[in-house]
Length: 292
Ligand SMILES: Nc1ncnc2c1ncn2[C@@H]1O[C@H](COP(=O)(O)OP(=O)(O)OP(=O)(O)O)[C@@H](O)[C@H]1O
Picture 1 (spheres, helix red, strand yellow):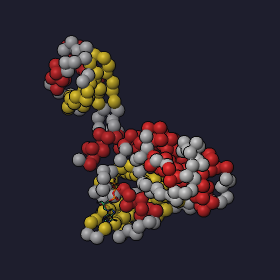
Picture 2 (cartoon, helix red, strand yellow):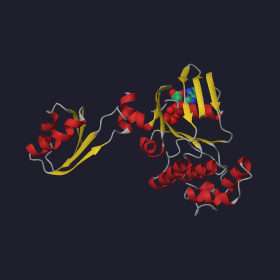
Picture 3 (tube, protein in one colour):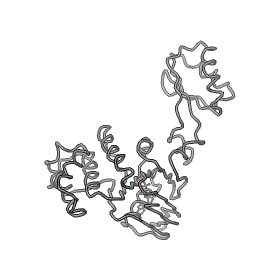
Picture 4 (cartoon, protein in one colour):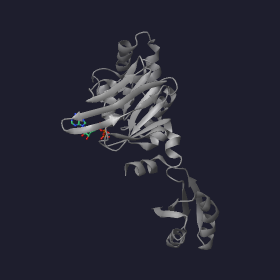
């Protein structure tokens, strides 16, 4: 059962075609990450799903009753306190939800201490977390979140990702982001959008498996040149990149050969090895490969 389905979704702004036929499928209960470079059309997709803009063509089907939308830069009346903002959202969207829920979602968003301060004095990151609190308080069954972590410091990001992860399974979440680490952390489905087209859509595992090969990260004492030269000469090595004064990343065309040969190469050149790690296929590598 899908919470959101679009078919041939198109959007033109004047002569500019922002979406060129997008078929989105968001299963119920999934956390769907819409990723893409700047200008790919992510905000446009979310605005069309939310009914905030009209499509030029195609259809949108939403099989959910309560839909909550969080824009990328949420704005609130500056004279209200954080508590009042969230309580107002509760009263307007889900008056049956008990008032005690307001303090709970503020705590989940890390805003307990600031709850009774006026939001005019909140930082951008605090406003984004307040937006999340106001979005979840009404117990929506579909959340449309535009760049929910873009303004957050690491602690704020952790809180918001935690909130999103806890919603998974209960509610359906569609979030847009250019932060691939966030997608890898909380999303189970991913859609890669570029220039108004969906280049890939499916489970995160399907996207990663069989695409970017795993890489090995080798840390050893300088000089790194002899190690780099010896590795580059091996047939199973696709590329060697220097990523730090003591670090090399080895991309391989044959993980099996890397497993048997990498350590031998390091031993043969007498490298002073600090550590060797295998890194799984990374969403960032796949994303760059797809959108290149
Ligand atoms: N109101 C508008 N009028 C004209 N062009 C627009 C409008 N809104 C978006 N666009 C254009 O449509 C394209 C898609 O924009 P959109 O904001 O949906 O992309 P995005 O993927 O969200 O980008 P970003 O990551 O930079 O926020 C861009 O080329 C943008 O310039």
